[in-house]
Amino acid sequence: MGSIYQRGNTLWIKYYRNGKPYRESSHSDKQTAAKRLLRLREGQIVEGKFPGLNAEKTTFKELAKDYLTYYEVNGLKSYFRADISARHLEDFFRDYRAASIDTSTVNKYIALRQKQGAENATLNRELGALKRMFSLAAECTPPKIIRIPHIPKLKEDNVRKGFFEHQEYEAMKNALPDYLRPLFVTSYFTGIRKGELLSLTWDKLNMFEKKIALSAGTTKNDDPREIFLAGEFHQVLHEQYTNTLQAYPKCRYVFHKEGKPIGDFRKAWDTALKVCGFRPAFKCRTCGNEVELEVDQRWKIERHVVSIREGKDNKWEEIACTKCKGSLFSRNHKIFHDNRRTAIRNLVRTGTPEGVAMKISGHKTRTIFERYNIVSETDLRQASERLAKAHEKLKKVTQTQNGHILGTIALVK
Image 1 (cartoon, rainbow, N blue to C red):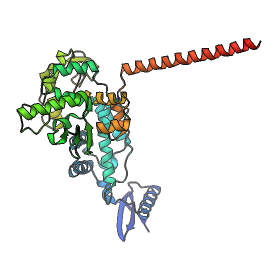
Image 2 (tube, helix red, strand yellow; image 1 turned 120 degrees about the vertical axis):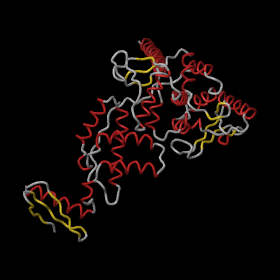
Image 3 (tube, rainbow, N blue to C red; image 1 turned 90 degrees about the vertical axis):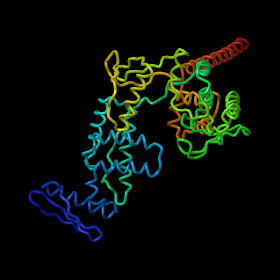
Image 4 (tube, rainbow, N blue to C red; image 1 turned 180 degrees about the vertical axis):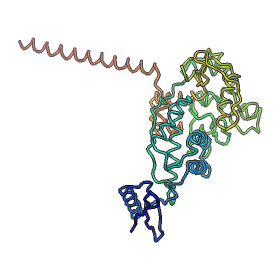
């Protein structure tokens, strides 16, 4: 049985687990508080849920370290993003113990990050990392934390909005250099991720069976996928195969530049955008003002973001919005990833079952798939037109039936 005793002005409790005594301060001079804590500990011991007193001493740094170790030992490809979230969290929680992190503390963190210009989608990734840290600590033996606090989730507008209409696809296809054209066409028809395409080798492409076989471990979610070739997509890859075999027989990669893997092609992409009449503009996150930036200015911003992620010195020439003088920008122009959204939308438009479309695109969950299944103004207009036509047909049928009924009544009279 446990007991309560006094040390100075504070009441302490003593209890046993497996014959080992534990002494703990109630941090109060009131008997009711000490009795409540003693009953809690005795109940936890009976139920086998007593975490031990070390759980109260666990720091946030320990949680973050275990979190990154979990990603590292499991070889998760999202380690880079997990590390970014952990860095932002550590800037705020570095001096906290896990037991002192509660919902109000988390809300203070949210308010601070919002003042820094972080969007809700970014914050949800960081809050998800924090929740995962607590979950991993709770799964340890013995548990490293006493409780998992409620961590709110923010409302976010995460529906992807960029895609290529057919005429835009044709224009970009003709404007891109020869070495990028097969890559662009394949992405447009299949929705395969850029990283998966750039690492695609000829042993994964079966021209006889007309299919691409992405093996496990080469995709983002490590699931194998098969995509079959047809139409223009098949024709372009067949030409790529023939040309590569003749000019660069030792090249392993399906998409290459003069026999070597394709690297950064942002400059060629921006040039093609300008040829097609698209503006490679950025949008100010503070006021929403659209700002046109030259390629070298855009790269300065992206290098600045990378330097923050890698923890390097923030040495860059500040580029300010002409309206509010803010320096936080987001892309507001066509990007290569728009092809992935376009392919998914076109699959659904042409009647492909969503399960099959998800298998082709490589989406595991319907939630993420819906973010890519974009509805354009044309889709909405066509839906309204279909509804109007159906209403007119129903109206004609109703008028015919009413006329028949009135004619029958007149005949009876």
